Length: 409
Image (cartoon, rainbow, N blue to C red; front, side, top):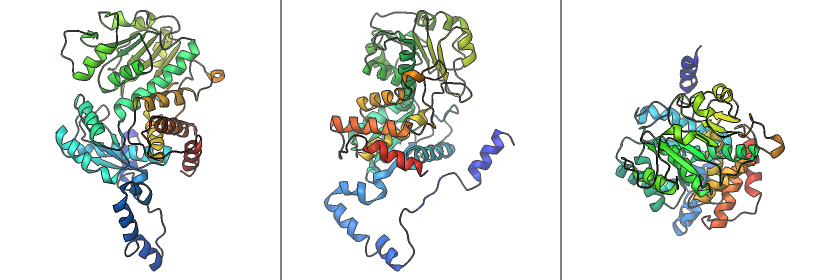
């Protein structure tokens, strides 16, 4: 069978790919009296006195919601909440398989940001974290920002931050390989949508001083006369300190790093050849990247990567979101901070040791068993350091426990 037939059979054989399994045995009357009445009243009573005990006495402590309204699903666009369910189910399976995080897909029958915010907030007593998925831009910013203000559990929009962490871990390792400094390297981000703006903002957070963000209206700069949303305006103010004007051709000439979060086949051979020596190019448009790996190498690019598994240096969010939530859940974090994201970037980048770096190996393999544990450990320790963790654990504990959890999957 072809991919279409295989995929439909895969998802339809068991009525979807996600189910619910009890963690405790239920084999006799004694078990029944503990799982339900009368024994179940005991955890209810103590949680009433201390709500944080819901993280340890119920499934809440290892449970997140994967929430979408179906307005920007993969490269399919606004296909509705029902059609978004297979993606949310798949995401939940990845959470479980890569970091033993339980999750429930929740597809909402509204596009109204106010209703979405209200609904997700009302779900807070059930979950230890919220993973926002496939919301259209620019409302995704408003939804996430408001939820972060009003909720006391981590809220993480993976299309923004998971993508940014995955890409920048590759950039950090690639710069280490070509012996260039992130602080001074000229980094061009083509596309300032949800993912592109997150990449640009995280670059600034990491200390990069020469970042250019490019939209169809041109290179963004403070004061540009163009119809930009509030996040794009923020990017314009915090990047391009020299106020360079022009298009992608101008931005790419002499650049050290070129990151694509825009559209298919936008990086020509000539464009990439105009970059600085030992150039780094990551084309991450989905499903068709800005260039092929082979074209980038023909153009003289030193390190190239895409989101495609058929080429080296695949950029894949699955290296990020399971570990981020595993680390946050293990210390009962209240938020995912910018510093926790940066910690995740370096945790991934450092998995590729100096002696192992090659032009075709600067991105950690998603199936490397160290990936989830390393990200989880870095996120957990940074949460403790910043005071956003309800629970403190000794260094190394989260790494070892995640290793054990994943080994059972």
